[in-house]
Length: 249
Image (tube, rainbow, N blue to C red):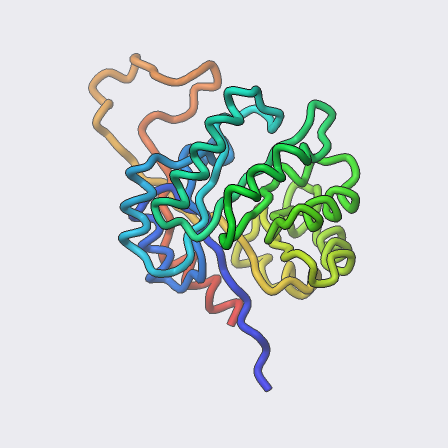
């Protein structure tokens, strides 16, 4: 008897990325923008074009800003509207995370997000990796009806946090899906699956593409004080996705 197929979710930032991911063997995509900031809410246009481009499940990131997960009342209203818009545009689910100022799950706000998403997949993203009591947080997410939690096991990568992820899987006992995420690549994916017992993984498999349109004026800079490269951006790499799909069987 063959082993169950391990689902491969690919982190994407455009409709083109989504199409490449599907063509290369992905089972699901998570659509973002601003991956250099950890992923923010994609535009309405990106959602529409991505949905039109693929038939596999699409999860829309709902994250209005970088810099933590404790949101103002205005931020939260934006998140609610973004959930409604994403689902109206055909997203199969949403990924979000809201914490209190001390890093605990913001139960009331999270419950409201879940209620906005009946019949859809509701994913608590890697904000989970900074909560002070992960098993308590896991039970809370189960209680409010979250479908899935993304986690690196509260370590720098899912490879490093595999023992903790395995603990979460045992604790969840099938009540919530556990999705390993964070630094997973073709060299570590099989080990992560074997050590955690998970039936799915999340990976950002990209290569850098150059955009030379600003080369005539290199002294002009549009970013912040960290000065990220302004002539390049990540795109999903088809060979990397196909290789990981093959490694997973």
